Image (cartoon, rainbow, N blue to C red):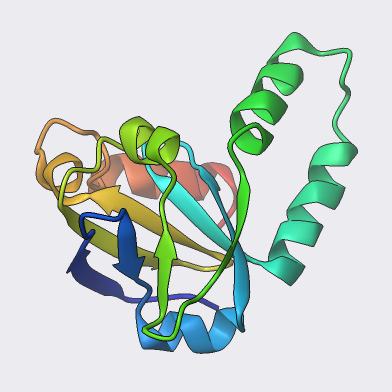
Length: 143
């Protein structure tokens, strides 16, 4: 399980250091792809396989499912860590997540989220938890 928040940056060659705690869980290889909410996701190879299995069960006759599959898979890339624990963020993924220099790396259970620090820190981004809304959502799931 991935957890914790880390602040780091991307270098001129579009590389960033994955926090060592997360690298240990990922092994030597991972999948980087577009996430939801204008961030990037990193999956371990085994969790990526689980996601693919779930997605393959969705009805591809549904246009929204097909759009999601394109969003999720079209720019997905397998990454291997270099000796310094870095991976490269391809230009199209960097642009999608609005990454310039500073990053926020979040553990999010079965995946890692990579955010542009500017996007993450923006009070209008809608990513911060509204406690009343959160409580109502949990209640709707009988949690």
